[in-house]
Picture (tube, rainbow, N blue to C red):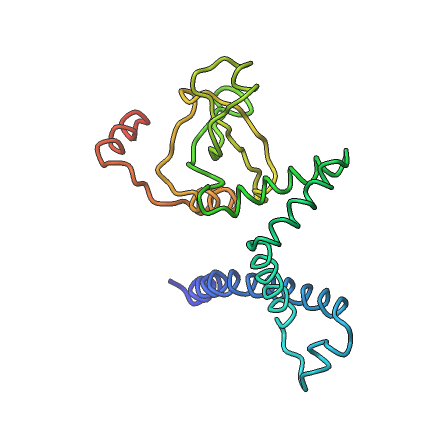
Length: 220
């Protein structure tokens, strides 16, 4: 290997090592700085951490927000707190526009944050947007209610098809179980695969005979 090729390989290796760390730290710094600015604008100047401390410590605002959320959670878990939350939800429930927004946002947060529920249950492949074109997706729950009754399939699944590289947006499909192909990769590996545009792939956890059979079918 020539000196130029070796230096180029070292350069790429350095980028692969430093880029993910640098970007992660930069995004974390932006979030911490934004929260600090928000908190400093809300707290009175006399109680502002920058006024009480001789130096500015990044992350104090984020710590204040975390403590505030914990205190709110402790209060809401008590008898009085539950009563006030119930009254507040009753008031919002009488407002035509706000009740729809509130119920939707609350249901999303309960689904994502509740320990007893997983937002994404398994990674699958579905034919989308046309037959013969396969897309990676996530099963969120079995389909129930009016949608299942109208479709008339015995086993229907709610399938979320995320977009690349931003998986927060996408499409919600209702697909029969027999038309999806379940992958062995974890949800985290599936998200990495989608965010990277297929560059980062997880390990193949299928049994060895199944892998060999697929290779024979593919003509490898």
